[in-house]
Length: 177
Image (cartoon, rainbow, N blue to C red; front, side):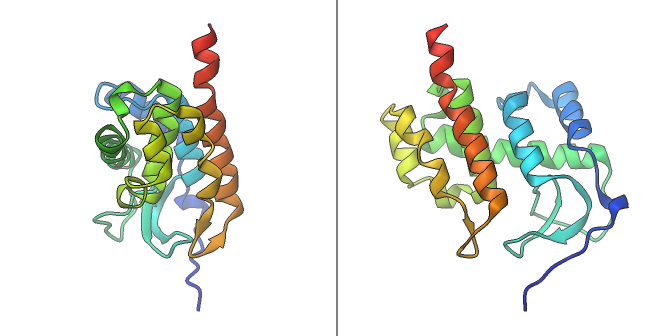
């Protein structure tokens, strides 16, 4: 039986508000730009009360999955949890994908997919191999391959991967300026 959880409308929080809190209070702690935060936040959405995501993992806030208590979370706590989770993804990108040298749009998009699927799944991926070799275009073209959860293609992941790919490929536009 598939685990589906209804989320009360009152449990929904604003991704824009959380991004504002992160930029105002935590921008010196993370490298991910507003563009990267928007992709992650809009794809994950923001929910104040714990729920099970499509991969059947207990989740709260903006895609946060660790140490969850059955309670209603405040915007500030959601922002703190999100920053902690983004830092985890960024550490993975820096360690396994030459992250310190990636152009900002590439870093943002790779941080987004790492946030979503986890370091253990991407650190030995073809995408990360391309990043380590400096072949950003080939790395960007890997995004659409990561469109499944539980073995099924999910429309939300298809859309997210296209946004990540587009942001990733935008590095080329920056280098032309």
